[in-house]
Image 1: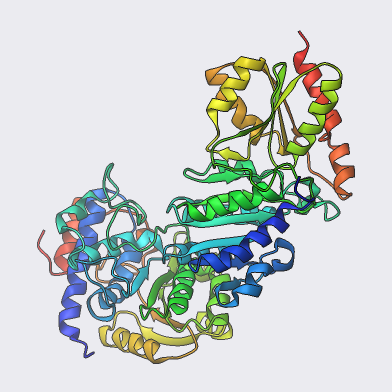
Image 2 (image 1 turned 180 degrees about the vertical axis):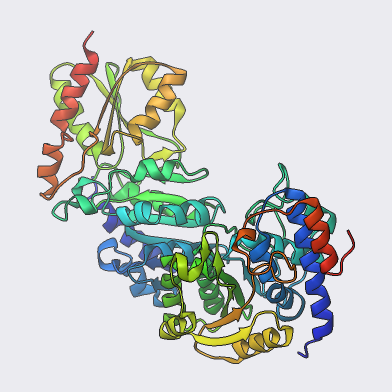
Amino acid sequence: MAEKMATRQAYGKVLAQLAETNPNIVVLDADLSGSTMTKEFANVAPQRFFNMGIAEQNMYGAAAGLAHSGKVAIASTFAMFAAGRAFEIIRNSIGYTHANVKICATHAGLTVGEDGASHQAIEDIALMRTIPGMTVLNPADGQSAMELIRAAAEMDGPVYVRLGRAAVEGIYEADASFKIGKGICVRDGSDATIIATGIMVGEALKAADQLCQAGIKVRVIDMHTIKPIDREIIVRAAKETGAIVTAEEHSIIGGLGSAVAEVTAQECPVKMKMVGVRDTFGESGTPAQLLKKYSLTADDLCTAVREVLQP
Amino acid sequence: MACNCELLAQKAADIRVDIIREVFSAASGHPGGSLSAADIVTVLYFHEMNIDPDDPKKADRDKFVLSKGHAAPVMYAALAERGFFPKEELTTLRKLGSRLQGHPSMKMLPGVEMSTGSLGQGISVAVGMALANKLDGNAGRIYTLLGDGECQEGLVWEAAMAAAHYKLDNLCAVLDWNGLQIDGKNEDVMTVAPLDEKFRAFGWNVISIDGHDIAQIAEAFAQARSCKQLPTLILAKTHKGHGVSFMEDQAGWHGKAPSEELAKQAVEELGGEW
C-alpha cells in the first residue's frame, strides 16, 4: 500500500514530473505556492510559473487567456478562493469558453483544520458541478490524485480538482488505473453500498471492515469523478444492494449525495442516507476532531448504513 | 505606417451606421458605448492590428479583447466590415440562433478572441494572452477596450497590477472615457477619476488623447508599440453616442434601441442611407 500522503503533496509531485514531460503546461498560484505545492513546479520550471499575488479572480482570468493561447493552464489556490471567490470568473471566462484550465484547489473541506470556517470550503463541489462542461474530480489518496491529475492535464477542457491539506492513508497500489468518469468499486458487498469521495473513501473502507464483523457486507465505491457522474455504477449498486449511503467532506447540499440522488431518483429509486456537513459552517480544530464533531467518521458511516438498512 | 485619416474616418462612419442598424434590428442592445468607441475600434481593425479574415487563427496575429463586452455592436460591425463574416448577418444581432450574441461569444463568431460581457474579465484574460505571447516569443500584440464604469470593478486593478509586474509591453488597453454609465455620470455613481493617475500609479505608460481624433488614436498606438517594459493605457476622451445628435452624452442611450423614426434620423445624420 502506498505511503500516507496529503493529496496536495501528490499534486506537487506530479507537477514536477509534468514540468519535465509537457512543455506546454504553465502553472499559476496566488501567493500560496508553498501550501498548494505548486512550488514543486516553480522549482523545476520557473519560467513557466506565474505567481499572480493575492488576486484569485485575476489568476483565473489570466489562466483563461493562457489557455486560449494554447497552454495547459493549471491554477491553484485554496478551494475557498478558487471555487468561492473566483466563481463567476471561472463560470464565464473558463466554463463558458471551455478553456483548457485545470483548477487544482487545495485545502478543501473541514480538514483544513485550525484555520477555521473562513477557510473550510464545503460548497465547492456544488458550485463547480453546476457549470456546464466542467469536470469535477475529488481523489481519495496520493496515488489516485497523481493519476487523475495526469489524466486531467491530458484532456481538453476545464477541470476542477479538489485536494486536501491533511495526510491520508494510501488506498491504491502504484499500478492502479483510473479513468475520469468511472467510479471504482474498492470493496464488494451485497447488503448496502457506501459511495464516497475524497478522504471519505478511507473512512468508508474502515466502516466496511467494522460492519463486516457484524455480518453486514457493504460495497464501497470511490466516486473520484463527481462530474460527469458514473450513472452505471450507481444504478448497479442500487439494484444489487438496495441501499446507498453517500459520504463526502462537503455540504450535503449540492455535493456528491445530491449528484447520486439525482441519478437514483430518476433511474432507480432506492433508500439513501447522506453523510456530509449538515448545512452548517465548520470551526477551528484538528482534522480528526472536526471529522468527529461533524459526524464524518467511519463510526458515523456505520450508523448511517444500519439506519438505511432498517425496514 | 502612415495613417490615411480620411479613409478611416469614412470607415468609422460606416461602422456607426452598422451599429444603428444592428441595434434597431435587435430592438435592444447598447448603442451609446458602441458609438463612443467606434473611432478607436476602426483604427484598430483597419490600421493598427495584424489580422487576416481569411486566416483568423494565424499564430502571430494581434488580438483584440472587448472587455466592455456590451459594446458588441461596434466589434461586430468592424469584423463584418473587415470581412470576417457577411455584413447581412449584422441584423441578426441578439436573435435566437444568431452568431451575434448579445455579448460576444468566441465559440460562435470568427474573429472574436474572447467571450466577454461580465465586466473586468476581458482585461484579465488579455493579461494571460500577453503572458503567453511573451513566453512563446510571439510578436502578436494584445489589445483590450475598457469602459470607464468598468474600472469600478476590482478585477480591472488586479489585472493592471499583474500587467505591470510582468512588464507586459505587448499589452495595450484603451479606455473609452465617455463619462457615463447606466445610472448616470461616473462621478455621481462612483467616482473613477483620475484614471490617468491611477494607471500611472499602477505602473502603466499612460497616453491621453481625444478618442474621436483618428490621427491621435493611430499615433497613440504607435507610441504604445515603441514603449518597452511597460503596458500602455490609452485614455481616450470620448462622447457616448458620438455621431448621433440625440444620443450624444446621454446616459439614457447606454442600453436602449431607437425607434424606426430615430434610427432613420441617426443613419442619415451619419451620412448613410436608410
